[in-house]
Image (tube, rainbow over all chains, first blue to last red; front, side, top):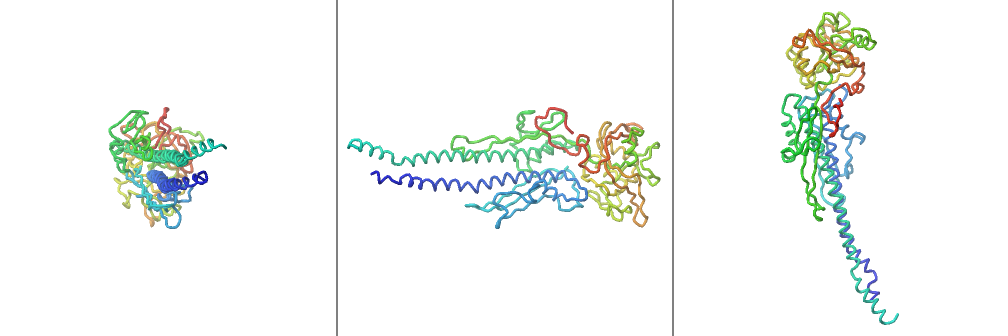
Length: 138
Length: 358
């Protein structure tokens, strides 16, 4: 009888651990996407705000300033989970805010920063993000 | 071991069958609750970032609209709608002052904007927590006047003021029979105003062979009416997000009367006691070779801050603006002290109690 119970804990652990692991792993991609969503909100807000107060001095473009404001210190690219590797992509637009050092903004116009990305799935799913922020130029 | 003890031992062992499964089930539930707390708290935090940033945008939009004479609330609502925030998140108003939870409020010298909504939980609903509140708040002030005014003051006047050489105050805009706006005879058409919307290309060529036009200027040459409108807009801080760097050459405003310039300045909201940021030029108003056109221009060598003392001959019949030097000569925008320049409508801390920090 005692012999029959040997390894019982191992079997029970073997039964339950896959359930635990699947539950945790299923959350990994969701967590990465959620964090990216929050980062995207922050990046787009920073960029829209910068574009809304952009001052043209003849040496810089609105787009570069907005991008620097959003991704400053990040090498000019957004820091997003599971983005930046093969099979992933991101796109960042700010309108109206061209990459042109002879452009100056007009006042009281909505300026929208949009960040779209496709992140690599760790375990499952197809994760495409799209966030934006619209500020008003001064 | 005797027979009784052996039987008892074996019975006990038999009762422990599945014990690990029970322990794991309890452990799993605990893990799931912890994951639920982490996930739902994370979602709550993300929504808080979302709400705060959108409240910030709406607050500043309201402050800007108000200073332009528009409806602050309409701008507030439009900004939130444009950012995907539903009307029930900001209307009807809830709370007031520091306790504002929804809506827009003007508190005498600043605006407070707040949005809030209830966010459904995901995992925490398993333990009876179905919703939590999201609150985004922002407080901001509107810009009173423009940033860089389209006024150019000669370098020698600024330097004399810095050295304490009288007069203590003098004309910076509009003709004043007792005061020369430029050092040399070439400045006879100069009334102190320059175009921020027209830059010489290349910037170092005093002949201004090419003029770069910035929005909304498209006419060449602009009519007197357009000139007046552009100068007024710059005094208002509208469509004038331009900051000509040192070394740039700017055409002077001609064909507009002293009275028009002075009234445009007043219409822009400038009052006695306000501080205004101006361009400093070397004193010469350069007349280009006629083959290059007639864009008389000045060279930007820096910036200075003046305090407006009075309008001459009086407020109602303004022909020139008299001011007193506060600071200069600054080589760039970044050097200008933040306490003397009001460039932007901007956020201030939600619970700030003192005077508005300009």
